[in-house]
Image (cartoon, rainbow, N blue to C red; front, side):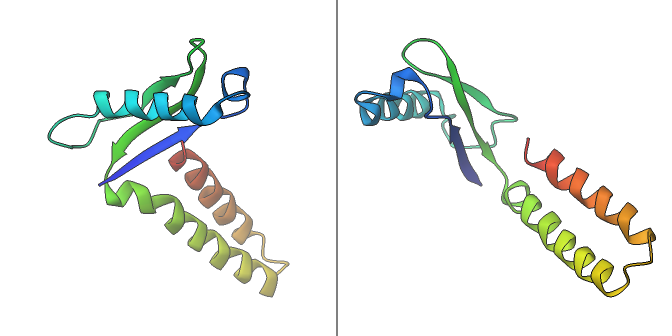
Length: 107
């Protein structure tokens, strides 16, 4: 399992004393984690001191964590095949499918 935290730091709450705001949000995460630690079944929202949505956190499986990497590896392989056979358009459908999978697994 992995704890995944994604936080956008590009707003007013992080301008002055940004480290304090990050610390406050991380402390909030600690109070919201399941005990014992387990898969959260989705992402939880994070909000800054002003109530603005600034990100998400969740506990995901190791398999979920590596899924985007596997898609990127397959994408790199297909691009290499397409370079070697530029007139074979069948590879474009495969490339498109892998890109869609990779994008879907990052959300």
